[in-house]
Length: 278
Length: 318
Image: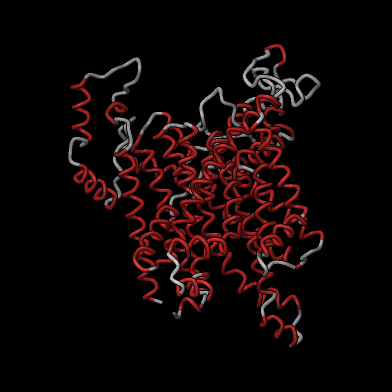
């Protein structure tokens, strides 16, 4: 079918290759963090505080003389686990809610979508702060909270796409053949609304990384000694005048990660949406 | 129009009520005893059972949940958010002072982001495929990928530490000393505006390009109207509709951003109050801050929708 064709088209876009490679590299780094990291992330070398990039410490050291590179590598683990976990939750629940609302219509639709509106009317970052303050900043809580916040994004997209797709002839044909509702939704509607959901997944991953690092920056991320990118920025900000490296590297890596997810989403959208294809 | 207005207002009221209710049950269903917080209980200091019971009585925590809920809703309608656990002052008092200071950053950032974003968006759309389009679009993509605390710190590094032209953090009263206020406010405003600016610019660009493909543009062009007039008189008017909705939605981003920006620049607004009350577990203040920002967020979206309806005849006459 043309699923093959669309994958081939995606691979022709250099943005997808570059960002995909970066994300893959990051994921591999996170998985093999203990093997790759040249130093321990918590070992303090008091004689080497605030050292710049050099042969011993490739990216320099922070205010306790800890190796910045090793801390970044371990931090990748935390960031990726939290954002992937959150997006897994929000995309599955949100898409399902949107599909059900869009397909069944009536009261189910009304209640589900108004609920999504209510969830959507909290400024996400504040709600996240609120929930984390009450539940405590463990990794699981962060995943659940961020996941919950992003459910409406997926629900809205799945809902509006389902409304369009369910009127099409092949859905009518499946209904006439007596296919069950889960089969119609799963086999006929879901594959045809998958492109916008994939774009949203990539965008939401970027947003989740931003949110997680923002929370860590405010001191609401997982507690030390787990290294997290946001907290690295926060702690180094005070020592900016003595050595800028502690703040520069984590800033760069957070920005690059979010940027790759966003560019990836842009590229997928450009290629899968026939109206935008040139 | 009036029917639309009523429907939209009704929906907003339901939404406000839903948000308030969710927040209420959230606070009450979660673990943690507010009486402990009031008494400053912790690992070193354990209040006695009688003390706890007395404070719970004072706070009305012994009443049935429904009674507490109606008291809470009644207070909300009167504009009463309860008293702070820490200093016993009414929450609304502090919120009012803090909100004006936060808005001193948020409103200028919003104006800056909207005007500059629309301008750059038009520019990029007009030069589609040329170098400046790639350049601005690339900058925009970076703009909303860089976290506020990163851009804020970069600005501090450049303007406060290296060039030494602006203070790195602080606050001055806008009404007493405007020029000093500006010197403190300019960096936070700029870093706060970057993400919404990028969003507005991207939306303007896409929306303009979509409009350029419409039939009416071909007709106008066939009539021999200049590109300049097509862009500003015809395309821009239609292209701005989705941009207006987007600008309304940016308030959420701005409030979120202000939490961090105020933290970076030590600006005594809502967010610093929020962070402080988180530290002391001052639930009424935390709840009040989140409630206030959510309400503002909802109301701004209402205003956006209404102005959208006002501008767009398709909605107005439905």
